[in-house]
Length: 491
Image 1 (cartoon, one colour):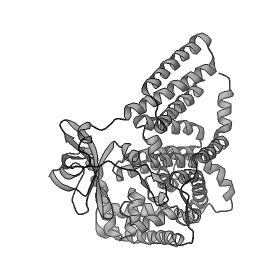
Image 2: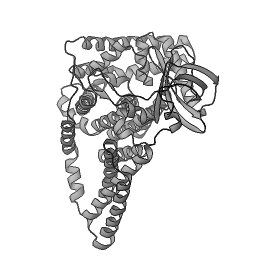
Image 3: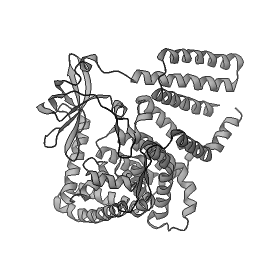
Image 4: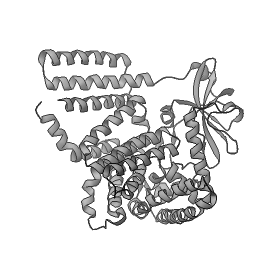
């Protein structure tokens, strides 16, 4: 019964947050539902003693809690700033995150303060400005609200809620910025960002562009400085995930490190893999997306190493609930969270079922494992990608198969390039040369497949109903027997 309660609590809360994310549910109605559900729960627990009634009451109680939690996170911006919309304003505040360097500009998140009110504003600043986390700045520009836009695939991107999940309500484009003072950031974040910056600079010294951009994406998750054409090539070939902060991407390097230490006891190998994930998160500056992806990767790593998939399934579900509890907006509006979650499920549960179809591939260098995992993840996340992004890559599988076996060693040598560069440029040169050759090959593969006629198709209207049905079939095939046994087993 405890196990049934656990799953009922988790799914009830998730469904409540999801429902409130998609539809308006009145707060007072949710509160009334929670009180009624609690009353029914007490009745079925102490009077009727009916297990099904208890489970339904718990489900409805947690559903209402989910809607209430979303309500309390859905805070409106201060009216003081709303009155200044579409006007030129002068705001003062502090940069609260690392500037995001793009091809022609910088995206800077700062917290404006005025008359005791605070609000987060995303500004677009000139590329040449030296802006850092923790700087106190004065900004002059037009205050705007973000708007949704149509992507190249013809899909409407919900930019408003994409920013809203990080409590960003306003934009200011190409502003005049004056740095008033520096050094006001959190000590730990300053330390993490400084490591990342030094590491990135040493890589750029040892490896030239565009190969250095790819290496920065692989190790640090940085893809913002990619040119539009290079970014499009990655999207069209279905290889953009290798430069994204996803649980799958982090798992690649962690599993590679585990293979290196496979001659040692399993506990030591797992520890080395988890340590590599922690180092990756540190190298990316401790970004929230990296932390979420790291949690997913640790769970996938432990499951594949220990074979305890069912225990890890509960841990994975609990991790998703905790992340949603902390920030309810990630469940429906954070694509990176959704992809990490789906990819982790695929790595843990779907890949072992797919592997039997690749017995003809050698196990050398982990090739069979890489190809089977790649195929499993791509198949599993494809319906979501079609619905959310409207992009179907017809060359994704061969492109990934030609690239992914080389990604772990590229990341390993790339890490050594940056690490050696911290001590001496000359020490980093040999590693930089090897990294360059591998990166050059990988970019050549991406370029080759991107040039294939009809490499990518746009499907802007992939239906939500079909997406849900496909994942319902996946869930039934992967978990149907366990769910049935769980809910039919005696107390």
